[in-house]
Length: 226
Image 1 (cartoon, rainbow, N blue to C red):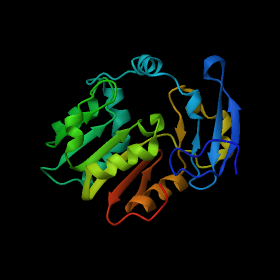
Image 2: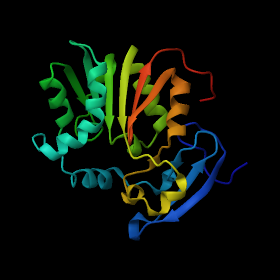
Image 3: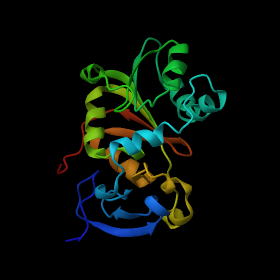
């Protein structure tokens, strides 16, 4: 049995030390799961809630900023042609400035937002949606299995989940990758990890562009140990 903590996504005990790095308070351990291929920071090394919120407020989330909208468009413009008029969506992990919500509303969709720190409206979590978006969100999840379980409950059969997060084609490049230097990034996904997620929940995975995966909820999840 591994001396390291189980994977927070698949709960496998097959985790090994993968990398140690960073500077100052960002110096952390990174473990790699042998079952789902996710790389993750030990949960004891996560920032506290106040530290995370402070970091998020340093990001540029201006609803009207063209550069920020173009950034969000990397996922949304791939997802949009797959959505039908009148569909209702949820931007899960919207951040302090829900620019993506406004972009989708401008296109005629009905869109709610949820964010643990900035839009903690639990009422939206009692509904179901035709599509859910997670842009630069899943890498922050303290409990990714719990969050993906929740998203599966929120997503209607035949619906779409659009995810944008940093993904490496080869873990050998991890040491030089800028993405793990953000102290709020604690989960790192490969295509193999995303395919694993799709298999567990009955979601078909498509990778239309770099760092973007679109899932369509089509079937029953695999039977796995929680």
